[in-house]
Image (tube, rainbow, N blue to C red; front, side, top):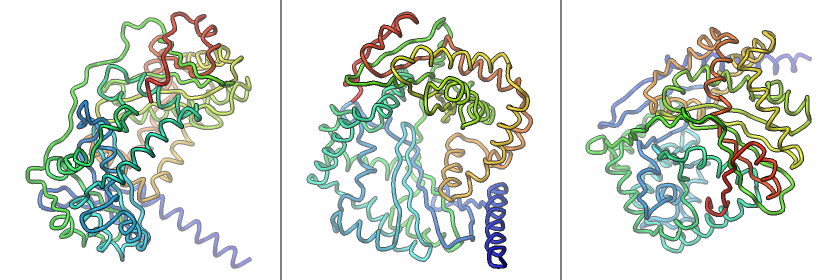
Length: 461
């Protein structure tokens, strides 16, 4: 019994320590200038682990018409071979130190992350810098990567949920610079060559602004000389930041939902996505957007889940989100249903949205969902990778770090009327794109709603 109490006490102290850390982030942050590169250190002595995130202020929008997908391929293939080492040697070396590494490419920014034991940070970062300076993207490895990418795109047809999400993103962002997939399409992959990737890496190394985020013990800061000397990075001349002036694409003159249908063969289920593009003014109140998203479709007790699943039995799962990048955002409701219940599903979703917009829900439901969000927010930031990613995103959006600490206080001041108002703005039914992917027979049901755009799924692969 005493042993169990000791374990329980340790568990409670660990949770309390993590919560306290996440709710007082700014006191753990220091800023440095490493030869013109802004470095943010999140001091975390709790465990001998580190996380390094290298932010690049450009992304897939740097790809020209004939090199779509090149930025994503370049970051993906950094470990495919250098002038001194082959891919197997590189991977074996990094895995020897128990390192995790990956990259993420967005349209307007990218980042490369590395994490592991702080005692191994020096040899690991030397290896990473070697990759950035010496990667050659061997032709044989490139062919394998292209074949793998082609296979992944073609197999998307077998995952209709993933295919629907993939196509809906492009459809809902049509008319903006952010609609084309960062990975490129099948027609783009064969245009990527080793020379294209080498030029792309040179551009990111020499021209693009960088920020470095380090989370871990103070010992992690010893990589300064490695970054400046072996990565060859500095802020001098490398100051390009991707900024895209974007017009207001909110459908002001749209008086009825846009209905888009993508038929696929042999489908007994309808994939449904409902949402739209959000302009910069519509994403200004991020905390309210998150509260509204949580209230509408953030879990088993959310309004949409109760209405669609528990009350009507139309689906197993439904979710909603509304969030933004720096200059734009997206809102979406995602679910699926049997073919015969498609029309009813759409009707229930619409009625639920309008119910929230009219404020026809109990104060108890609202306060409970708000309490859940407040109670879980800082725990979600307990991990180093979550915290570091949030810090880099806040810098990208040009927002203060105190946003993280103040989140709960801001959310606590919102009332039910605020959520109703935001729901009416974001999910105004007449401004939505209703997207359905499924059996060709579903077109008849959708035509009852008005004009239907029919698209070929192959055009999006």
